[in-house]
Amino acid sequence: MIREYIERALRKATYDKIEDGTFVGEVPGLQGVLANAATLEKCREQLAEVVEEWVLVRVARGLKVPSLGGIRVAVTGGK
Image (cartoon, rainbow, N blue to C red):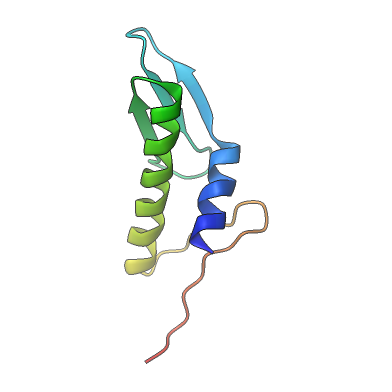
């Protein structure tokens, strides 16, 4: 489920080359999810890690994770 969510997030991601020649990537709708790297591929890899960590932190804190293209991440209690 998380892997599908990350893949969907990367499909929505936007990338820009900035003045210093590096790339910055973000996922619209996922506040604070940003990455910056020397190459576009490295930026994409870093953005995938950021999305994963962002999802895990939100789940750990009991915060809602917005759906992306029908992909939902939901946690149910199971003690």
